[in-house]
Length: 216
Image (cartoon, rainbow, N blue to C red; front, side, top):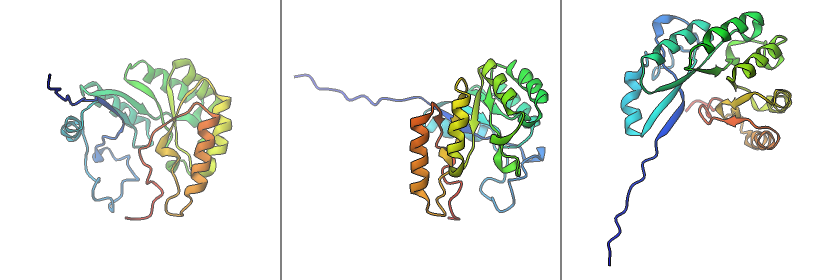
């Protein structure tokens, strides 16, 4: 009788949502003094031991500041980081021709994967309603770049219409659609997420699910 030796299967993972930042750059206005745990610089040196401990082989760097300058900063970091697979950055999607120029510049770098608008920094100008958005989306499709969508549950129905209009776009839902945990509106969020899953081809990232949770 042969003894069976059990083998532990190691699965290599890609972390698709990692932020690196340097506070001295000065464009992280959302990172206020009450955020003690994260109000410091974060770099590849911080992530590397955590990645090894959890068998993460590659990461995607995601913009954390609403500036094009930070996209250039992240691309430079990624070029010098062996385990960076790509960068999702920011362009001025509300500026039409300007965004096209920025996309042309960034897409020349093979590490550039796509863009993500930060709704918290856009005031009343929600990206779903921007007049120059159609031209920017067409450019993203042409360049085969992704678009990461940050919306609240109340905007999911509108997002479905938008995704069906741009069916050729590789779209990613950020933060799982931001369930309103603090207000206890789980059922509404779950219903809209199910509808989104059935009516579109969007991918989904779970990072940031507690964005609308109460303190603690």
